Image 1 (cartoon, rainbow, N blue to C red):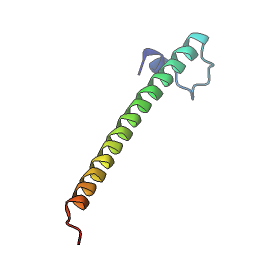
Image 2: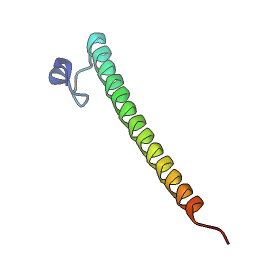
Image 3: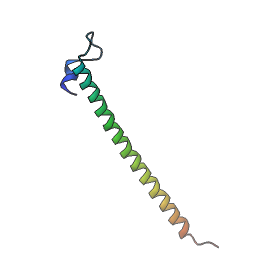
Image 4: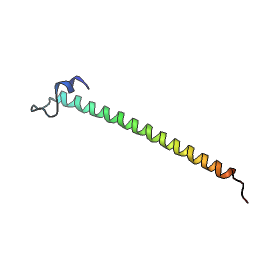
Length: 67
């Protein structure tokens, strides 16, 4: 939370200055980028995990002798 957040709340009865609005939007954008990066990292982790499970199951299936 930046100083702008401490000085201004969106529920305030006064309108934000252009500088305040710009800073608030930058903070929101930064938070969105961080959230997106965390979500992407989690998605990649889950995809790697799924790929590992598939590889294990395939190797187990191929290791079973066929009659």
